[in-house]
Length: 406
Image (tube, one colour):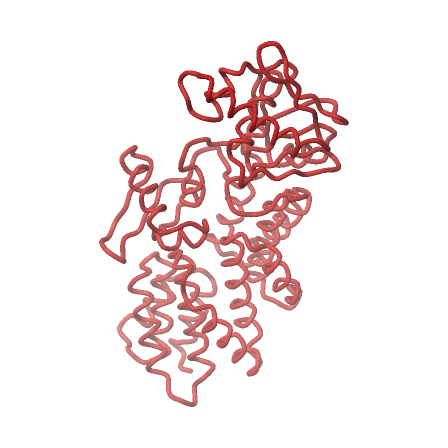
């Protein structure tokens, strides 16, 4: 490898893409194409970066399998940054195996990190933790240590383990400063802000206040009966009842939880559960049936009792009843949660992450665009959607991941 290629590679490792381009911008040999592609990716020119990396992979000869594997890892990273979650994971796994077989442990670890970060976006935390556990960050360079710690923090935040998340972010900050890469330090700083921003709303005794992520964690471990509108479950210290597939029952439970210790009128419950403006006899009959079903499902947690004007919730063991509500409550809040990271997403990637149909996601995006909350660029399959991050708001509880006890 000649001196210009070596100097360009060092510039990229130090987070200086312009310095790398100054050395190889006019060259079309395979190593230069690969470095140019990585530099363009760091500058945000993702389409151009993808084309250059693919040209580099084709330009490397049959005896340069490791170089081709590095190009595949680079292309996978570009796909991740551009939120192309459908990029073939098998190709990345094969490249990682090739790098490990030839002793390139740093780039093999980078491939592992990319795989884990993709799983984290999809909410597959158990898989992400299992793969991450096979990596020893002590043997990695500072930049890789920072990425590793950021992933640990991301998993911990999804699992509501704030102490673990804070400790991981401290390690990430130290490693990023040691690497002296400004973009990496900024990423750590942005992740740390999540722990100090509102994560949910607590509704209790007719009053409402914002909660930080660590306060949500403390609430989950408290003796309160929690009607959790983030995961559509009802829980106390010993039991969890999921109502995720029973939206009418959860709507009734939430209305009773918000009114506790008072009761809720039948007319209000009909409006809440059935979206009916007036309650006729058929609505009242249906309400009696649904309340009976809710009473059966919650029998280990609380009693649902009839009053003169409606129904009330009486916890069996808990001292109080509270409602944990999402920080943003609107029809398409989950879509906004992903777009809040500031990256550009395709509708297909959003559908994959949300576990929904692409058509449903597209309708949600069109509605948000009409409301001025998101914007798109590009056409056809190249169309991407994005929005600026919501100021002072973390959307951790809107992303797909199980909370403790689910």
